[in-house]
Every structure is written in C-alpha cells, then in structure tokens.
Image 1 (cartoon, rainbow, N blue to C red):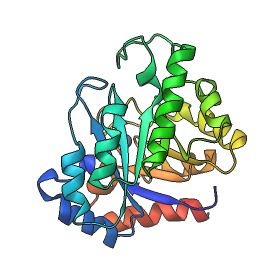
Image 2: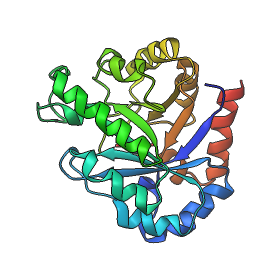
Image 3: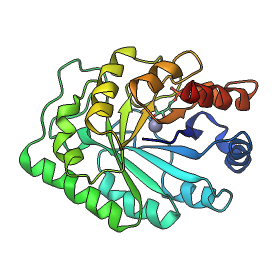
Length: 239
Ligand code: DX5
Ligand code: ZN
C-alpha cells in the first residue's frame, strides 16, 4: 500500500465532547476517525452504535472507520451505513460457533464452510451499502484463517489486532508483527491496519512490518500535544 492513514480512536476521547474532539483530530492531521463499536457480548465493554455515529456525522467530514467488536455485525452494518459511516470492519471470529472468550488461551478454531459463507455474504452486503469493508483478526487468529476471504479480493482492508479487542490503553503485542509481515508479503496492495498499543515507541515496528493504517487511542488522546504524535507516526512512514 502506498499511503499512510492515521486514524485516532475516539474510544479514548471525551465522549461528552465528540464533536470538538473530531474537529481537534482533523486539525492535528488525522486522516480518519476510528470508531470502536462494542456490544458487551463479543467483548466485555459497551460503546458506540449507529445513533452516536449519526450525531457525529453532522460534525465531521473525516472518514468514519467503524470497528465492530460485536457478535452479530450484520445486525449493525445497515444502521451504521445509514448513519453515515464510511467503513465497517468485522471480526472473523464472530462467525465462529465457538464462543469468543478474551481469557481463553485455546487456539483459534477454523470456521465451518457455512460460517465462511456468512462472512462472504456480509462482506458483499457491506460493499453493496457503499461502505469500505474490513476484516479484523484478533491476535491469536492466524492469517491463514482469512485466506479465502482475502484471496477473493473482497476486502478493502485487513485489521490485525495488536491487543485483545475490548479496551484502550493495553500494551502492544510485538509478536503479532510476524502476521503483519506475512500479510504484507501476500497482499502488497491491501490496506493493513494495526490497532492496539500503537504509540511513538511502537509505531516504527508496525510500519516496518508493513502496516499502513495506524489506529491509536490513548497515545493520541492522552498526549499533551496530539499533533506531535500524529507527526511522529508520519515520520515513521517516511523514514
Ligand atoms: C481496542 C480498540 C482500539 C483501542 C485502541 O479494542 O479496538 O481501537 O481504541 O486503544 P489504544 O491505542 O489505547 O491501545
Ligand atoms: Zn479498534
């Protein structure tokens, strides 16, 4: 991929001041806003859905990149599209009949053929709604599990989680970088997003591995000078 995208995650912003925070992010040079939608079921946290996206849409022209950490993304994507979202990224693991457990160390269970069909259908539906579509993998999910969907060329973006989804402020899992490298090698033109623990200290590793869409919550919103952090990310891309 030839361009860098910096996407602050509004999960770390002041939810009572979303319009101002969106404007501030635009001012400091953000390309997108990353919107973490959590249903309290796929992950143990509850955040944003279509009504908030609809309100936010009136206050910003930034690309709204919705990351769906939900059990049933098909239930929310049409509503997000009509609310004015620009992209929707769903997790491959949500199609898996085995329940998702953040604390469960067991390996990723491959999708059954009919579950894989559901993922294909949702990707097509999302595109038909005019959204960019992304596929997210949690840290333990291997790239091979996404091969069929990615080889088909259906996905605009692959989100490789660098923390377990659910909360901001966790530390970057460097061991995921091998997966980013594999993905970049196999899919040279694909947008590859990293999300979780991206900060001035870790960004170069993610960029070197091949990521071109950088999500950051606490590193940007927690900084005294958000612009400095965005600039530092851009520098990691150029250097
Ligand atoms: C985590 C979310 C992230 C989160 C990242 O489940 O998907 O987008 O906001 O936060 P930081 O950058 O603080 O790790
Ligand atoms: Zn996210």
